[in-house]
Amino acid sequence: MQTQAEKERNIASHAVHTVPATKQNDRLRVLHVISYMGRGGAEMGILKLIAGLNDEFEHRICTTRGFDADFVRTSFSEEKMYVAGNFDLKLQFPLFRLARIMRQYRPHIVHTRNWGAIEAVVAAKLAGVPAVIHSEHGYVRWVAVAPPPFSSHRVRHDGCYFRRNSRTA
Image (cartoon, rainbow, N blue to C red; front, side, top):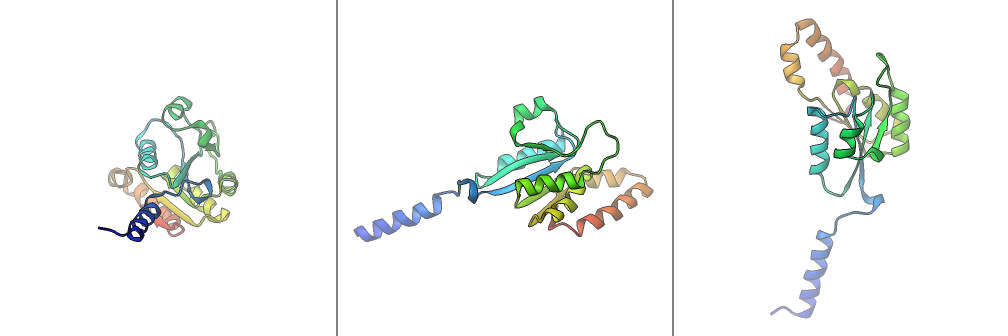
């Protein structure tokens, strides 16, 4: 038989370990940056990542070229989206717009996805984000089939950005 003190100690220790940090201030803010949010492999990877993490994380998605409103409405939330660029522009470099969004949202982690969002790595450093993670969807396959001048050029540039990341996946 347990004494009353042992029962209270067991209840108290159980409560401490099972209560998640759900307060707004206690949640880790993650900003996922991608060039365009539509129905695709990289986009679905971000949504799976968000779904797989618990309530201790708060997620937002930022695009550099816009998003498919119907897709976002059914799979995420338009209120949790930022757009740093313009879909119609051929050449753009939204570095300072990305940094402004990051200073506004104040993420603990910026997760950049694919070459189209690589400028967000530098923007995160300018905005003082503590951790930057860059990942590529289908990167190895692309390098394997690309002609040598393109693949070596890309690897050289990726190496420059990868040194600025906290982690590279």
